Image (cartoon, rainbow, N blue to C red):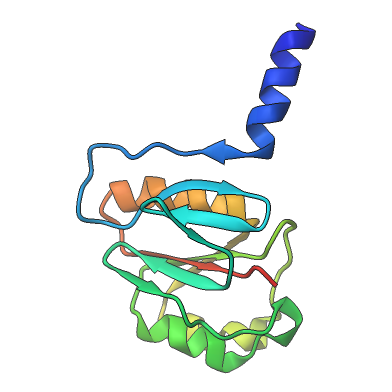
Length: 137
């Protein structure tokens, strides 16, 4: 039992996700402390991942500096749902910041980065219009 616990603890610290048979879309292939991998490419900065596009220059300086403009950019991408990865811990943005998503009738789910990666892969595999917006700072 202890051996099983140690293995599970190790796997939860750094997890490598494997590509499914889906080709031609962006998928998270791994993550660890301070980084994610999309299609085997490592990223350690704020990032928005969509099935067919990566936004590598998403500019929030951190969770506390999120602005309505940051969410307006996400709304312009026209996903059905945005998965906001708020770092290693769960933090909820103020509702006035997310007005652009509300007005565009785009769903918002807030979670830590690792949960956002797992959830994104499931929704992307279901051909949903999903965006994972990840904050590393």
